[in-house]
Length: 249
Image 1 (cartoon, rainbow, N blue to C red):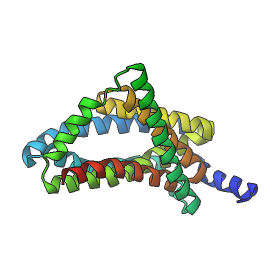
Image 2 (image 1 turned 90 degrees about the vertical axis):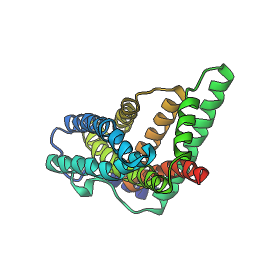
Image 3 (image 1 turned 60 degrees about the vertical axis):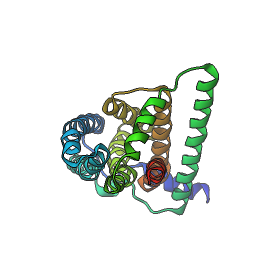
């Protein structure tokens, strides 16, 4: 690919085709709103649904499948009213973008393994053992319908919805306000903060994982578009969720 073609591709992936009204305020407001809504829905809807269905894993999957697209649609609608048009979301089809997504995910796993090794050598507790054990136990005891719902929710729907909202709308607005480099970093920080608030936890290895993934997704969005970051997100969540589900079958 020539330098001119690469520059054109990056500009297409990063830049808005329209003028966004108050882009910085829009991005921050949407990030805070998403965090608040997700926290309220997951904490408020999941427990009673788990009681009704008899499966916390299944309830979580249903909340993901139903709730996340609704929140993403709301973010997209607010963004549209503020000037973030669908053409700005960055869903460009590119084999180079797909290849970059795979490479980005490989880089993420390298960083994660390195971080785990450092924590092990220094004797620092990564903090994921108990949480991972509890999740493994819950998934292992879940009925088949719950496993299907959980995989569809966490492995497929969540990445699609989050990429539309966070990279397609929020990062696009921040790019107009501050440029692509700052937009990548700020979007990543907000995305990580959202997960920490919703999860009510901040284990060291979990934080490293979130930061690495958020930066990979952001760079892919800036360089190749939201299709690329979505592919990477689908692969990351699909592999993680799929491994749990397969082990439980």
